[in-house]
Length: 251
Image 1 (spheres, rainbow, N blue to C red):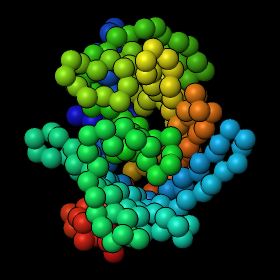
Image 2 (cartoon, rainbow, N blue to C red; image 1 turned 45 degrees about the vertical axis):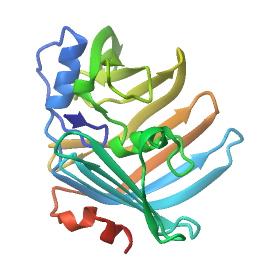
Image 3 (cartoon, helix red, strand yellow; image 1 turned 90 degrees about the horizontal axis):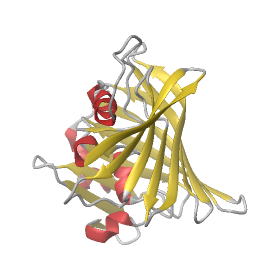
């Protein structure tokens, strides 16, 4: 199953020490997640000179299988919407609505590896909100690091044969206390390509879930970064399936 940095929950202390990368990532995957998530999100694009561009977004997600993003501001992107769905057979479907053209187009093939709305997230990245399908990767424990909060597992995840991934490997930092991934390095062609960090973790549903409310994706080669900041989050509230449709995208 897909377990993202956003959709995370606390398992608590006293867990058995994992002895392999597979066991660490199984703990990541085993966490309960909100059935739904709704809130607002700020997307800040920052170039190598420090110049920034800010966009306002509304976000809906359900059952780790459906996600809709709608841009609210500024005017040049207002009304643009992105829908990502997980089909029963496990495949993904992605659609982008462009209000200027009044058309919905499918995002398929190599387009999924392209930049999402000029950001440092690809369409694949944003559809997963920084997560990965655990079963699509082989996981190796590289080392354990110490921090003020306790042990952090550092795991290398490589795509299994036949898996179409944008990256040749990922290095994931997972604290033992929460099993909430806090950092992911993405590698392409043998080089570090991007780094995702998650912070400003806040509890929801009386501590059942801990959700990082800021994600920073930095393209270390282009010296460009994208900052996603979430606010006004609601979890486990009713969201009808009609939200995740082309009709709702166009509203």
